[in-house]
Length: 478
Ligand code: GLU
Image (cartoon, rainbow, N blue to C red; front, side, top):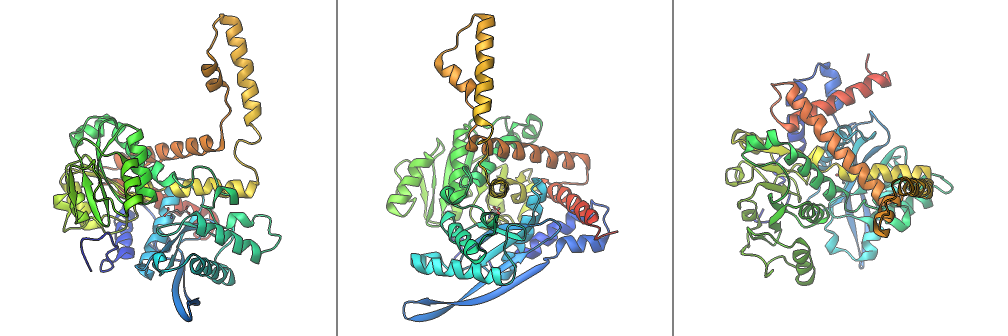
């Protein structure tokens, strides 16, 4: 396997790594070993194969859906379209979804799907056939439904695929009132929600902003508090990487490095994220962008350049025992799932760094998926019932204050105070609140027990405790 590409390293055991982290954290909880086993195991692993017609021959497609934990219903998680997908990976990602949902208090169990294809090798109509057939296979086995298991986008899939899934599910379930709640990440015109596309990246940026705001923690890293001027390298310019970089620079950070599978760019004075994105769109590569001071054909070298924060937002197993000693960042924020191996993490902490773990850092996507699902079940857009009422109340208040004080606001000031919240504003505020609260929950767990040494372990401990309570409430465990 070429080591200069951003590909998932299949030789490493991803589900085993997740279990290793789980077991380590479990020793800081008081639960029965059987209950811990139940929480850790994948409840249902559905592996299936189906044929599609490609040109004038048939091709058999390998696919999976794993429901890791039914302590909450429905289960939830994206569908990955990638040639690299395998059962171990889907199981690991499904498990991470369980812990992720628990950490951000989203009432779902974890699941994940995989379709083993490189989408670039298929025409639009072939992709549609594959997606619709995949959905039918899930329906046949009761592996999809608004109260059963709700897929979403993941690496290699997006709104278009979720639209096909929604349509197939609704067609096969005529008259089902909540059919649109069977999948999230849909186009807005097909019952999706404003802000879902950028939610994971926005969540990553909010996680970093919250982390670096705490002066006491930054001091230990030899950094000043606050996001302004922090130097960041982002790996991956897909949906998560691009939006993480975009929102981080909006918050005042300096994006000094960007890496994609074809190479990496670096400029200590900062890169214009949008310009790099447009350059890549136009030329097919980030290389050749005029605003970079350095270029690397080997994208992995991009991760090793000077910065305060590194955001791996591509795939798993990117930061390993082989390259961790060259990483100069003090903070790694995992936009991707499983980008750092446990061995690399141990070295990084030993060298005085901290890792904001995937299962918290990239939970913005599923958080907004939860809002979309709620919207689909309630059949009304957020803010629709209250917006005008809020505006009228605010208007009355402003008129009264102006009357009493004699002050007169400019029309800009008036409209910014009066304006009722849009769906996007409500979604973003719910997401911001979730990311901030969850960070402090994890940090408190870390500080509460001096034996807990990393944010990941603290996040796992919190998640395990919450899931254990759910099992106890279900009456499954005495
Ligand atoms: N695939 C995303 C994740 O890994 C989103 C899952 C969802 O929205 O259900 O978190």
